[in-house]
Amino acid sequence: AGFIATVSHELRTPLASVLGALEILREEYLAELPEEARRFIDMALRNGNQLAGLIHSVLDLERIETGVHGFDFAAVPVKELLARALQINEAFALKLAVRLEVQAPAADCYAWTDMVRALQVLTNLISNAVKFSPVGKCVTLGCLCTQDRVQLFVADRGPGIAEESH
Image (cartoon, rainbow, N blue to C red):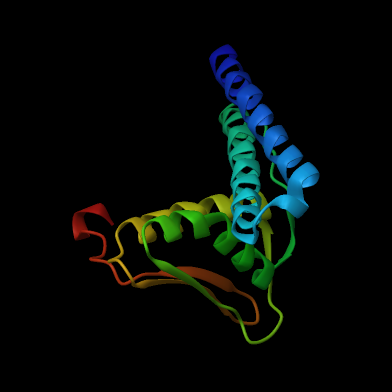
């Protein structure tokens, strides 16, 4: 327990400093920054906040292992969940020259889930899909909604997962 708490603290402290510096850049120099620089600062802030959430989740995993859970279930709009997943992963996709697109449900659709945990799962799937997609191809985030079920998916045009790794 002490090791995880120490590592978590050691990660959170420099991350808080980085996020603080980015916030100051955005708040103090916003008017002077070119549009592209603003976009990258916003992207870095979103991803930094996602990283902070992941660090917090490491502590949650330790709590789960000891029998104390910390899930925050709510009715989450699937369109919002998919849009946030796209935002979190767009810098990585851009770096690898892969497009991300959302195939949003036609009607309003809600999932009873923990938003942070769902974003973690989607981010893992999206980053793998982007990593193994050919340059210039598209990774699609979407869902299939029925009356009593929401199925999220990440579809890519990569080589697929080897049968022995399923």
